[in-house]
Length: 136
Image 1 (cartoon, rainbow, N blue to C red):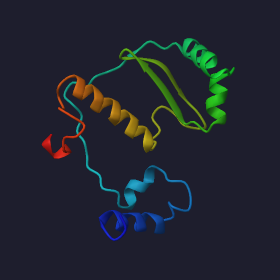
Image 2: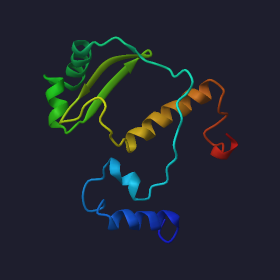
Image 3: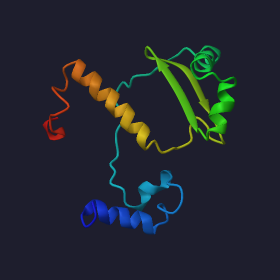
Image 4: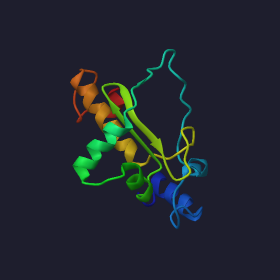
């Protein structure tokens, strides 16, 4: 990316100090391309069927750990949400973060977009991962 628009952006961000320390939500103010999104007229709302004990038990059995919340806190986790069959079954925030705190998602967004593209392909909205994004 050096020399192109991306390289210039990276240089500005690094000069702003983000390459030296942790990146945070304010980085978008330093030149990241962005656009405002408007809410859908009738947005999808996840059902809430919280089962923190059940989710904790699954992770305890899978990872062989006790104290799921403690594990997430010690790992530096800020937010952890589990969705199963269109319902939120676990939602918790750690290390000073609250439900309405603004957080960056970085690589988490890639996983979500990847899952959504797979669903869109399965439902016929996108023909192939090889299609150019400009087709849509």
